[in-house]
Amino acid sequence: MLTWWTDTSPCKGADGIIADGAVRSGKTLCMSLSFVLWAMARFDRTNFALCGKTVNSLKRNVIYPLLPILRSRGFEISEKMTEGVLIIASNKSTNSFYMFGGGDEAAREKIQGMTLGGVLFDEAALLAESFVNQAAARCSIEGSKFWFNCNPEGPNHWFKKNWIDSDKNLVYLHFTMDDNLSLSGEVKQRYRRMYTGVFFNRFILGQWVAAEGVIYDMFSQSNIFEDSLPYEKFYVSIDYGTQNPCVFILWGLCRGKWYAFREYYYSGREKGVQKTDSAYADDLTAFLGGINPVALIVDPSAASFIAELKSRGYKVKKAKNDVVDGIRLVGAMLSRSEIYFHSCMENTLREFSSYVWDTNAVDRGEDRPLKENDHAMDAVRYFCSTAASKPARENKSR
Image (cartoon, rainbow, N blue to C red; front, side, top):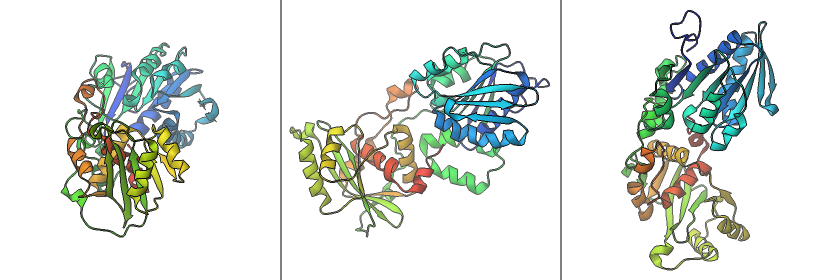
């Protein structure tokens, strides 16, 4: 990766490079360092683009780890973070590196019209296809090249089909954690424990595999409990519905682990009677039975219900609602035995066995749950993403 573009490399005629594979394999740092070294060796007074899902993730994953290394090699760097540009200078050249977030379709307008000597795409599979195509089209300078770095997604993902599997004259390198010589065996084993199912295959084995079947296939009898425990504090997570089911789940913390021990599940469609926000709030008071939770973690789209709860004095936190990241976190917490569910929670336990991936979405290259049997699952995901213990949240990192 560090030398493919040099004059003595047999790959120097390639138009770019793709590095994919496992998390923590070292590909991001190698890729970003090589990109800057190439740009500074081949160009002067030229614009380049550094692209991530968001500018913040780009700074965290690429920029901040890279800057000390560049400075240690004698480069002078002017950080104009408010303008979104780094000016990097050596005794031979000075170039500008613009930072872009490309995680949505509207992002392509940010880079449109530029002329670039090259683009680094970090987390390429998480970027919008239209943004990647627009950024690649900006590389019209003689000798310009594309640099792609990513973790795998599904086998039908647009990046897999249109870049990895197509003949675009690109160098392709596949990484595993064993390629990162700074990782100890203990650290590698910890990362292997963090993921299960499709996410293990993608982020640990580095495979482009489909999300299919039951989503929480790691859920087992070991995640179910029957005892009454001395809880230290409480949360309630809520998935709001009018015709669709409305779900409350009461969580208690005991000895560093979270236990869901009470559920409320009401379907206006099945009962034939739709409840108002006020009626649901009354039901919540009865559901709590005098327990004073730290906060209510509520479906962020339930604006009117949130207003009703706040008017009654409840502390409300809008739930984080990144679906796939949330599913990955719930799966990791189940596998590490950090969350448990009481045997009395029949609706929640039923959904664990029937919550599946949408096969039609998978065929289009998207990871998306089927919107059925998902109301308690959404409430579980809201809690884990928004209020779970700090160690669990940190383990979410890719």
